Length: 431
Ligand code: IFM
Image (cartoon, rainbow, N blue to C red; front, top):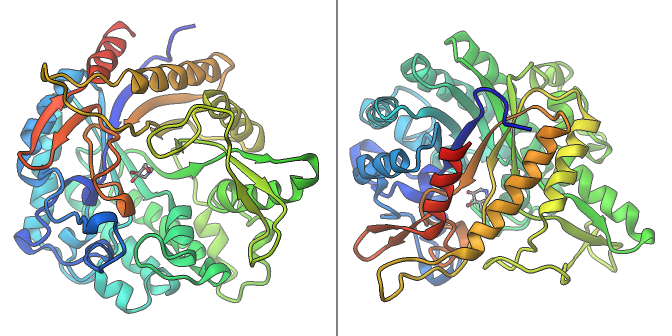
């Protein structure tokens, strides 16, 4: 079967991973600036200070998207550019940047899809408690309102949060991402406050006539190592796949929240405000076993029988299909967008000046086929965004992993489209 009418092929990026220009035009510090500048936090001390210099080179990057023929671009708006201290008046120059970008995209015939929070919390908000504090949810709604006030007449899709589970788990429970806290299960209030932020932002965005509003979650199918390990897999599933979806689509939490004093009676109805779409990010499945010791109800076990990406992540396109089927069976879903899917490999520019990333082509081809099977089965998927347009700052791994369709030489900022860029361009043109 063909793709649904209006299906959007796109590419995705995020502000801190590509923009650089961290001190320009009044931008304030974010938790990722602080974290990356703390010795030992990011591999080889890499930071997002310059990144892909997209803040200055965005016209070149929009031209690369035009060359691909994408219909949509998912980018994120850096909260610390718009409200440098996380509250108070707008920094006009910060919003001007996104205004120019959005106009540049529209002039190129590319639909703008803006994410409002891709992990770069203004540092002053973190100093006041960050996502452990309920007030951060209200600050986020205010920021969302300000961004939409300026851009809602031209942005087609608004994504409130990107992968809030990663913020709770990596940022607040296990200290591997900003803000680097190791609170284990005491990190759970950050889940509730992010969800509340999402719900409040939906209302704020709608009050500014936002065209379509949703959120993006990270999903990883949970495989039990043996039948006896099924409770461990279920516990992981509740945390990774249900914690940020059940409250939004079902209006209730999975069991793991327990008796949480920070959840107020009206909160779940705010969180369950209807959304226009759900963003799905998929990279890999996870295998779980009963924990031998420790505070968590599961242990993660390596998956060794599949080829892996440069991150060591198993390549399992069938798990992507089974995830889409599971979501469809579990919920009365709004339309889905695949807001991220992709892989890193240690790509290099060859002597002839080209980058042969055939492994990425295989990865994308197999995952897009899995998505098309889901569409053929009747699952309402309206778009696919490859992660990522450019090689970029991969959080605590710095610039080592390369996820882009376009290679970036960080010394010269030269962009070199890889073989996968031409492959994706041809795929878009033919479908
Ligand atoms: O680079 C990240 C992105 O910021 C969020 N989703 C996963 C990607 C690859 O790790």
